[in-house]
Image (cartoon, rainbow, N blue to C red; front, side, top):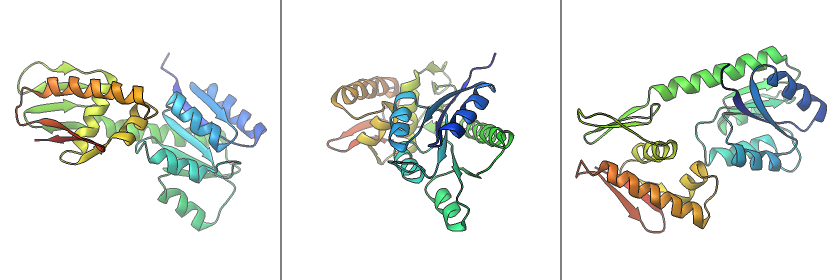
Length: 227
């Protein structure tokens, strides 16, 4: 059996939310259902889902506000908005704040499932093309493998790979400490910060074969990878 897709559903209409949840769970999805935006943000931080399905009109925190906050720490996760609103400016706003798709109520479950699979497939395709070069190293992000020249590749841990990916993507620029802590560790508290320092030290050791490469500590801001 294929691994279940971890999905976060935020829908304040209890009956509709339960119908969507149960329908998705019969299709190999693992669904976390929340009935307001605040609980959905907490669930996102706790479970790190692969895709978000967000109702726009929710109590405490609406779907657009929730999406904006998540986009500040996660550029990649696919977001589908569910809404009864049909005005053009609402659709435009949804896409402008980082939504990937927009489904108007009422909708069929088959259509929702097709759209979810399309977004996940598109995201996976983008990730498989991420083979990066830094100095004399080649970094295959999907395989989490770092290769120096023609040597055998070294396998990185999940967190090492994601941290290196963001350092390379922001090469010669400062990688914001708080942003990356929230993105990879789920918070920016003292213990997470110390953990990230350990991972930075590990990456420095892995990159030391190319003396041009340095990961600099920019005090009070974050880290910068230079070549």
